Amino acid sequence: WACRQHNKMPIVEASRDLFDGIGLMRLPFIDPPKREIAAIASDFIARLGDDAREEAFYLVEVAESLGSKKNRRLYHLAAREIETRFAAARFAHQNEAASAGL
Image 1 (tube, rainbow, N blue to C red):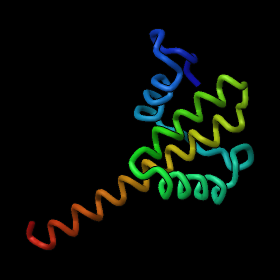
Image 2 (image 1 turned 30 degrees about the horizontal axis):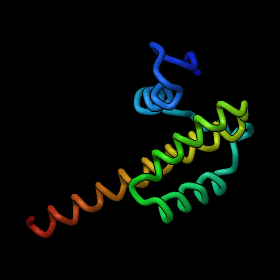
Image 3 (image 1 turned 180 degrees about the vertical axis):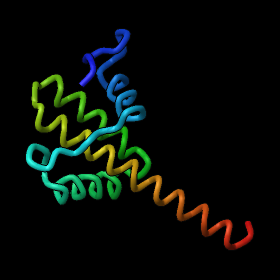
């Protein structure tokens, strides 16, 4: 990981910079199972809708402050999954609109 605070930004902002820039690589023997990540992402989306990604990043910050590397990684990967799902939904919506001639 990069330093915890990039130019004295809060941890969540620095995490977003890492997420938006480089991205994360999933490590299959160290990271939580994919089904756990998917379950958390689905739960956040169902309960929070558009705010799901922000909640995941908030929990990354909480896990960081509590010193829980495992939970920090879990919520980071969940935020990535949420963003992937939202991007797929936007893409599908754009394709539907384009095929409908809108």
